[in-house]
Image 1 (cartoon, rainbow, N blue to C red):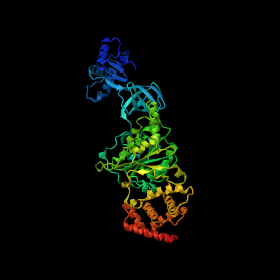
Image 2 (cartoon, rainbow, N blue to C red):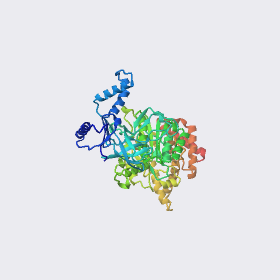
Image 3 (tube, one colour):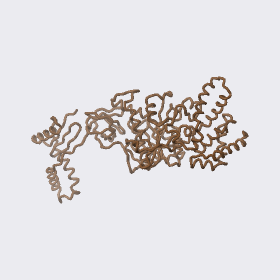
Image 4 (cartoon, rainbow, N blue to C red):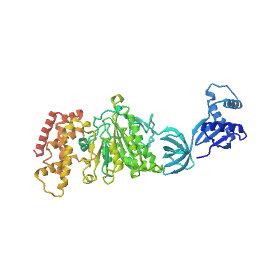
Length: 576
């Protein structure tokens, strides 16, 4: 710990030095044992530096303050420079104001984005720090003799002076961000000027239980396999999990694109990705017409670990601004595996004890305090919703690893994507056995509930039977028929990335499948037959499709009419 320093105007003023020393002895409860330094520039008074805290009671400092306020306080009228100086000195001498107290620190060491700083005894956890040279840091470790801070931006060297800002990390929010790409500090990354009227702290408390309402309104993804078997509700937290290159981001982007024209604001948070990948994502959303309703918050892999750490919290703050104004919001965290790795890196460099898989002990709280901010607010709070789709990457399909199990326990269900199915050409590669929505059919349209009741069971049974069939085992006619129907059902659930389906189209396909419309087609013919069927129904029963899309219900007479049109379609196809 650095020795206390007392700066005085004259070393000959032994009485004044003794008085100051005695005053600090009473204040601190111990002898400060000052190193006495003379500096005539302070004019009079003193400056004391103790444990990184500065007590400035110098006359030069008070003169500066008084000179700025002289013309604004209605004080004496003076005309000459000498008179002004005399007046200021007289007022400073008789001023009984206590010394100004402020903190400062000094960088002891800096490496890998982490600075260990001496001093700053009054600093708070999560407070922003200003370094000499313009660098910005985030306080993440509090010690008796100093703090540990992670660098957000800029360059730092040892012996740099650090000043606390008194502010926590915050980000600009509002409609000005729609269609923009920003970093976690709210700065534009798309080369265009950006100015926001409001700001929110990146960390915020989650809504309490009494501030929430039940999740009962579906958020359509446009993907048949998900909307029918693993429905997502507005205000839900649904994890997308799977190995690398299994289509996790594609599902998230399809969901964002499907919100066009539905009044849902989307926030896409890219953590640790290549800048080129983020640019390609923005281009995809722009080409599909979804970018104008979307905000992208990006902390690329080249950014400091601290920027990747605060990125999802900053994105959530952007989304919460819309939620608390009564809007429906969808936020995608892509992905939280990289987020946890960035936090682990910072924690190890801050010399925190490590636990399982070298993660710190609070890694569960790292994600729980983020995902709990997703909710459907009670009507008295505006009824806004924040739906979260966190993405987690697994290794070799191991969903029992530390981070996946943590996030599975926090979320309201998961969509598990299987590498084997993906490589076999089944897209999306959803494993219905390991996927679940804990909100379930409460967040599903009545029309979808009416036609998808046994769908999960049929898919699961087909996959079990297919395991035995692939070994060439003899099967009875009933099993062979079930395998044939299952193959066609899997073809119906196969969906290209660029093809999103409306609710009416999904209901029509599932009702047709349950009515046996596709039994007469070979497996390779199902996809084209499905397209022809939707076109036929759209031309001959458009009123039914419009009714389903507008009401979300499938009336009995509409169901009967659809089946009658299915029969007509089969006759025209020569399959009747």
